[in-house]
Image (cartoon, rainbow, N blue to C red):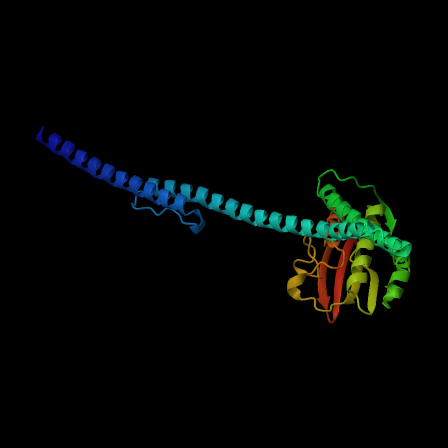
Length: 301
């Protein structure tokens, strides 16, 4: 009987000590969690104040929850910053031509204006309105293309023919800027599976981009390798850096930081989205003194 009482007494002491440690661990965890909630940006985690395996496993699971929440907060903050920047860019892009239009409308209200001046101002208003219309169209198209159900009519498309036709359409604009255009196309016809209208849109975007940034030469090259049709659009790299290559397809990115070339910075973004929706790939690189945008499509058999 005596031994049983002693054993029971020892068991009570052990359980009491264990309970004290557990209470201490819980109180410590509560204090740590309160501190974490007060300063969530510090990315702190719970530290176990006991060697109890069950408590350590519980703390590990709680820390996993905190880590996931911290990562979600970081993603949210980055997205929020990106949205603010995009709103600022949209506002700037729309405000610039709109301010110009309003200014010239105010000038037209001057009764002393001669007819020639009125015609000149109206012409400027029309051009600014078309720029504004283009911006709005870009924003609208971007939202559509990013959707999952953007319609594409995929068919066999002869690449060389489309490239040549697109280049000819811009021939006079390149000539005005004294930019030499070189077409390097294979003789054998190569076809890819693509939406003809959207592929032509991609080509137009890249040609317009070259018109903005090429100085003296613009090369369009097409080759076939490893069952892929490789298209390269090359012009002088100018001040382009390796760092800029990582953001060249980002929404609203403009090589012209003042955004004074009537560009939303969406042309390359839209091109990338369209190419990828047509199961192709697109990337930018620097090679010697040339800036290159390269597109790859599987060759249609």
